[in-house]
Length: 88
Image (tube, rainbow, N blue to C red; front, side, top):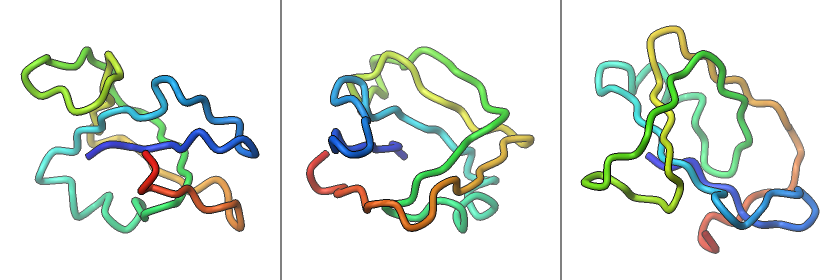
């Protein structure tokens, strides 16, 4: 999974390191699936940050976030402009 962010001027999201790899253990995937919708903006709490292994590196970001059992995902913006995932 990668968590994309488009360099859209009105959102202020930078174009450098705007995508970070996220790892969700298979046993927790169904738990988080309803919270991860294409184009949504979410706040993620209680996760682990680790360096990306060059073997599994799928983004240019040097780190990844690893979801753990206490990880919480909350949608923080409703009615915001949609992020165009195809331009990432």
